[in-house]
Image 1 (cartoon, helix red, strand yellow):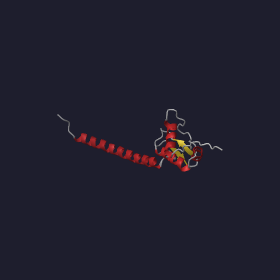
Image 2 (spheres, one colour):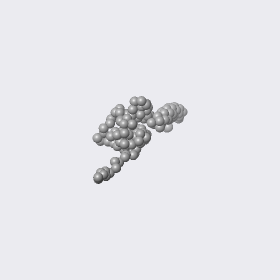
Image 3 (cartoon, helix red, strand yellow):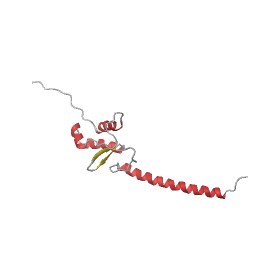
Image 4 (tube, one colour):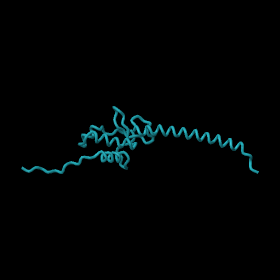
Length: 131
């Protein structure tokens, strides 16, 4: 009796899964647009024959890149690039913290700009015109 010797099926890594979905989200032949739901991690893991942690890691990479967001109990969605990073539910905590810090920096720069304008006006008012 002969046994069939098929080559073992390639099991994709988290990095490979992330690259595939990155292409599906951003590539010229994109399959997923803003707001589209990605496959559930459990189902994708089963379909690919990988551990759930592998898919979760791949989705984590895409979330860190700002391409997707995960909403507890709802699923994983392609992030709308027109929405500022870190402002929508399910954003990467790093982007949420960065958005808050950038907001604080923006406010401080605005206040400094206003103070500079006032100082320049004061200096202009005290400087006699040149002959």
